[in-house]
Amino acid sequence: MNILLAMIPAFFWGTTYAVTQFTLTDWPPLLLGALRALPAGLLLLMIKPSLPKRRELSSLIKLGLINIAAFFGLIFVMALRLPSAIAGVGMVSVPVFAMFFHWLVHKHRPNFIQALSGAALIILAWLLFSPSQIALDPIGLSAMFCAIMCIVIGSALTKSLGNRIHWWTVLTWQMIFGGFMLSIAAVIDANFSPDQYTDAISHFSAQNGLGLIWVIGLNTALGYGMYVWLLQRMTVVDFTFGGIANPVAGIVSGMILLGESFTYMQYGLMSGMIAMSLLPQIILAIRQHKPAVDKVELK
Image 1 (tube, one colour):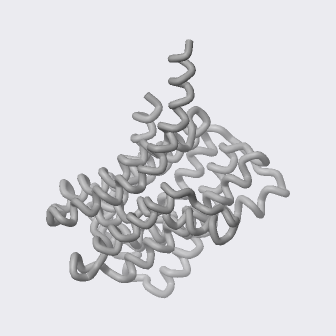
Image 2 (image 1 turned 60 degrees about the vertical axis):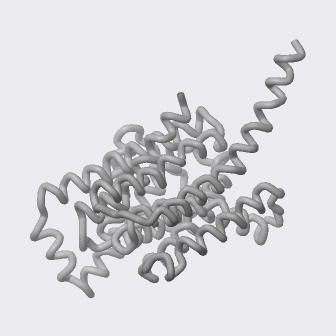
Image 3 (image 1 turned 30 degrees about the vertical axis):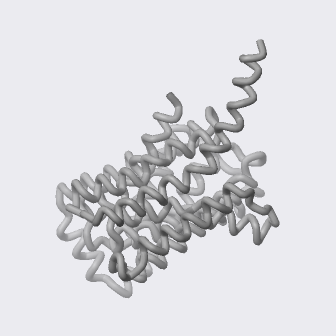
């Protein structure tokens, strides 16, 4: 049941790219990032008020910069420059980058299955993102790479704070600090490129409003709220299985909202990337479950 619940936030996150292109076309990424983060953080603060201690502020500000300010800004650059399906599927390569990061920084060597899955993911991604297969915006691809590194580094920072700061405080205040940074960046950007901001505000429509409700309310406040709530009740491995809804939502929402379509070969490469990203977790879950089954049989 929890795995089905884990698919809900993953689904909403996967729709970010198509919903943004469909309802918020040409909106500045920094403005979208600020509107996604700050209202959601303030809403979470209203639901359960919390105040960080002074010694915790520097860690939360750093986390807000990486996990929210940089990541949300990059996500909307991706959303406006890459096909929804490609953006959603491309993000499943996070485990490969995490594996290399922990290998280089923490000297944690990957096991055989992780290395095999990582190599297969690299090959599949190379084939899918090859210019001979599909023409992709280089700025969008660069934003994807940087967003993945934000996830990897931000996750390591979040884990280090787990025993020192309550998870709700971490969730709420990284949103608030990150949203505040994005708001300042958006104001500075508006001074250099005012037309994009004035056009977005002056031509505000009901479709824009629905898109913002989806991104702020469902995608962020509900999605991140369920994410941290579920992580208290299930293992990270189990939660990973729910993450399959993310790229699937990216593909389906892109087809429905934007009319995206790809060749059978490209869909095959996407499916292969999703499968390889899940393989290590599937094998780990089987190995963890097997002793329990053996004990039952012995009885």
